[in-house]
Image: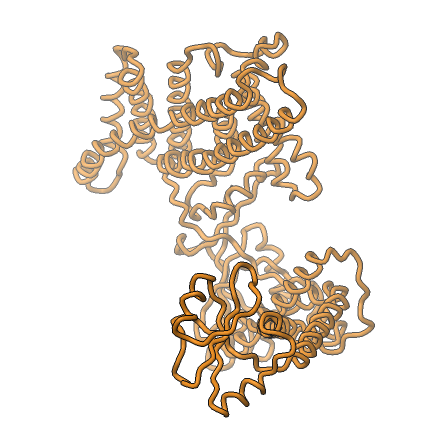
Length: 612
């Protein structure tokens, strides 16, 4: 549910403002809002320091991961973390320069391998001073043959199908229409020396980073300290000022935290004003649910949606519907069992909310697959007596003409889903005539469901269906918009009604995607099986079995990926557009982010401990 919030104005003397900000950070309940929007150079410097620290940590983590270092010793003492970070970041620049230089040196070394280790650049320069000009090319054999007629050329032994060729001329402007090899800058001895030197530098960098891996924990603690310092500076810079004597802060805190806040304010001697928020659109949204509902949080965070403060928390509705949609869209018991086993195997590496959500979705897929008789798209498995007994014939993926029933079921799911949306909205308007408008919409949803059944499935609409459609339209026209001017309200409702009817009909029909995509998943799996194992495995040799297993793994892996993409597209869409649209949720809110420090103790104590 969305926790009620209170708006806070807090006043502090200029002399104690730093202590006030620190105490607010330790309390960790107030979502601070900017009052002063001027940029502060101190904040910019702290942001830069934080960024550099993050880059240094990333460098060490990448190195440790790449080299697979499990343990590395810690340096005995670090007096200056800034210097350590600068050195770590400098290793990236040094490494890049070394690699670039090595690339050039390797090219020069190749020059000597092609044209001869004994050839000296000074000799070519000497010949040039005497009027003899040499240009070096690597050419095709056919090109060299044509050159002999017009030019004086000297050929070296062929190399990789091409001939190193030296063009000799008294005319310094004579050259070929080809790219000539540039002379190396260094002698062969110098090239080899520099290559050794650059490799030693890279080895020294590797040793240095290896030694610093043990300081990751220190840098991560320092990073938290910098984040706290930045938060403190931002809060201080964003405060308002009254004649240089008072500072004031504006923010929001949960209603349940007001008591602790007031106690702290009285102890600290703050002035404060706590009131109901005047502008709901500015209030951050704090959603607090039981643990079993909050397992849907990873999905909501992934799609980055937050309902407005005066809107409805959709978590429980999203969880129930998304679980059903996931099971229908994937719809294969084999895939569900595979998801469950993978989750169990990696359970220690998966965050708890995500882990339990995966358990629920895996079981939903497993159950739907058992009821529809779908096991990796193999009809032979579904025909086993023990498994066949669990199949509901109208839902079966194989051997039954169940298209009509499954489309009917999809429309029914859509009607129930949208009815819940208008029912929840009706509860919101319980003390208003708008509740009658929501009852009208429920009537319209079910009458449109009957219309969809008649148009798509050729099921005759009951006689009372048209009466329900007219009655719902009347209620929506009279009570969906309520204002002091009754005629104006009715006019607006009537103007919106045709579009609403069309939209409602298309929304119900839209739920047929649950059946269509689920059927496609089963059909694709069956097609892969038939293509790879057209005659079964009885006549296959060992090698053929291995190849077939790999092909099945790739085929079903692709099918699983497509099914999961369908879940992200269709499963989330039906919740975010169809359901949320009828519920009136626009996801216009901003998440509640309390001003909270990482270190609970005073920052001076922390900085003293770290030697900062």
